[in-house]
Image (tube, rainbow, N blue to C red; front, side):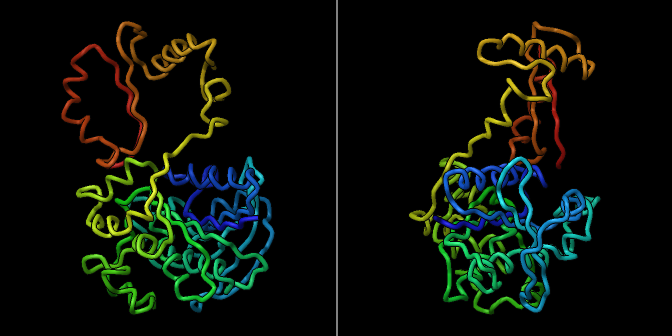
Length: 333
């Protein structure tokens, strides 16, 4: 039975800020249902620990001079064993996992997510002393990129996969932070974690993983060219034979209009006309005129350039001057 450690900074429904959480909350469970022995490793954020029944203690050990604890629970709605890293970096801090209430990154994010990476690497190489060790370590985005690089310091290295959900977020920190974190000096080079005079956590996965995956074949191609590669296109072209684009799917148990509890009127293939009733309910809830003679356009997502907002803004006045109703939901820039 293949054993997989899936490490991520968020997973739905425990914690979600973006698409990474959807994948981390569904893919490991699907792999488990296919007969694989999967463990999901997440930070033990304060609100997660507060919301769960007392979890089972798995281990306590030291990494890079820091004492940590790992506890086990089940991902809600699944049978997936989920391990939570308990440390004050995560367990004694409310709110967003990445930034404060003003939208500024937590000043110790490098320390926090390097600790998550160190724990993932320690479990994956057997250095944590657990009686379970993965055959494959699967890391995601910059928060766990260093874990893959760190496994190369051990003779007991598992196979590794690194998934890029968003290359725009690289986990960039200055040289002083790199030195303070006591990372190996040979990591500070262009062929490792150095990125134009900074330390890039995401490069830990891009350089050292056995395979790199992205959220679609199209995105895999885009990041191998400028501007999509964000300055890393040369590295990604070098690794193109190990780069695979796998289209993100959906969880049909969640995204099913026939069972969706949030819809005013549920519908399926035989009752698709009920969509019009949902349209009317949305217009009523938002104070829009109850019209059925114009399009009702909805945009739900982060309001950032990466999501295409710059394509909409120049046309917004023209759109609103025509016979159309527009609903936008999201936060961002």
